Image (cartoon, rainbow, N blue to C red; front, side):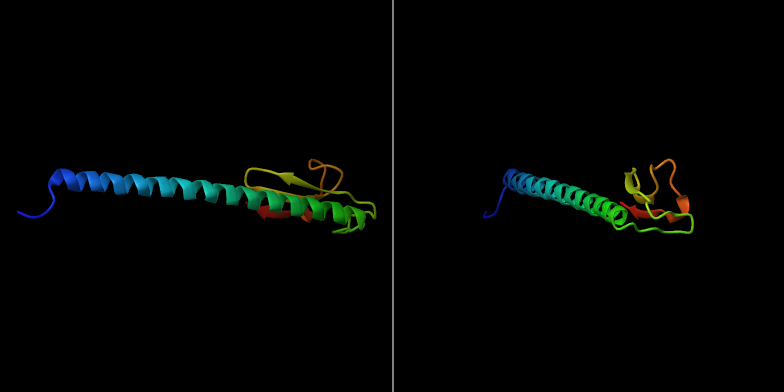
Length: 100
C-alpha cells in the first residue's frame, strides 16, 4: 500500500516546525534591533534640536528670555523637549512631547 506512515509524517512536521521557529526567532531579533535604532535616532534628533534652539536663542512663550536654555528628557513613555535650565524648573506650557 503506497503512502507515508504516521511516524514519517510526524517527523516531517517536526522538521518543518523547527525550521519555521528558527526563522521567526531570527526575524524577531532583527525587528527589535530596528526598533532600538529608530529610538536612538529619534533621541539624537531631539537632542540636536534642543541644542540648536539654545544656540539660535529660540524662545517659546511670553515668559522666555533671550538666553533660554533647552534640553531633552527621556521617560518611559516618551521624550520631552523642554525650555529652561533643568527639567524640574521648566515651563510646562512650552514642552514638546514625543511619544515612544
